[in-house]
Length: 268
Ligand SMILES: C[S@@+](CC[C@H](N)C(=O)[O-])C[C@H]1O[C@@H](n2cnc3c(N)ncnc32)[C@H](O)[C@@H]1O
Image (cartoon, rainbow, N blue to C red; front, side, top):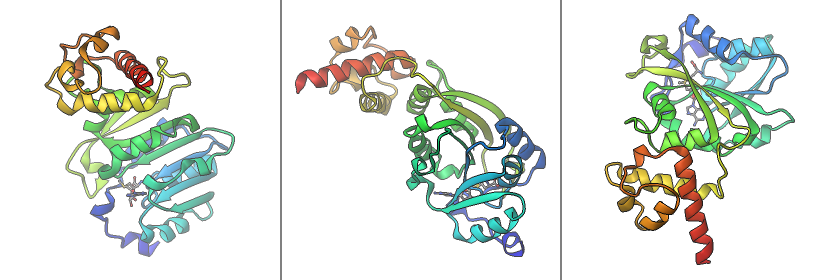
């Protein structure tokens, strides 16, 4: 245990360790781990959430990049339950290799510097996931949960909401961590939809369209989507080409994406 206590948090790994027992308890209660469930934790660090999760479910897999944290973590888990540690970069981790029969539950106080690419990496695998509970920068949670018309509404909102139901749970103050981050944090629950919210012909079209639309938030769709979808095609999807990207709902983006797929098919 001595070596873990002397570990100096590493900024490049986004290490802000949770020490507030009340917050740790609230997170574990929100996850509500049950014996036998397949749970994977991203970035266990010194085990703040890992150990109570392990205690509740008896077996846990974790993905941690920092080699120096592995042995102290294994030592702490000894006698509590079966902890399987993958010393790897989670952005390259194939969650499919963990797949048994039940869908995975994913938990993590995420390194904030990789949170957006990590969310996109995970939603690609969402059919294999039952739910995810994450600590993130509060502002990222606000963007994930934002509705059309809100200034936080953007690419992250549309793409996450296409895959998952987003439930912001509670806020966490910087003082709950060591070292304290500069920003406020929040816990969010993401539950992948069993059925997509509307019929989408292909995900690549939605992704391209949303990225292009929000590349210039202040311009109208007519202007930003010019090279992808002419105004009459936007109208054909029942969307007004004269409006800005932040006013378009997920269902409307799906209609536009289907229009784009149809055009691509016609061109080939
Ligand atoms: C914010 S800390 C959280 C630590 C611990 N779960 C806690 O709540 O105290 C983020 C953790 O993710 C790990 N990490 C950073 N980048 C990672 C990556 N690319 N893949 C896996 N783990 C990573 C860090 O080493 C660190 O342990």
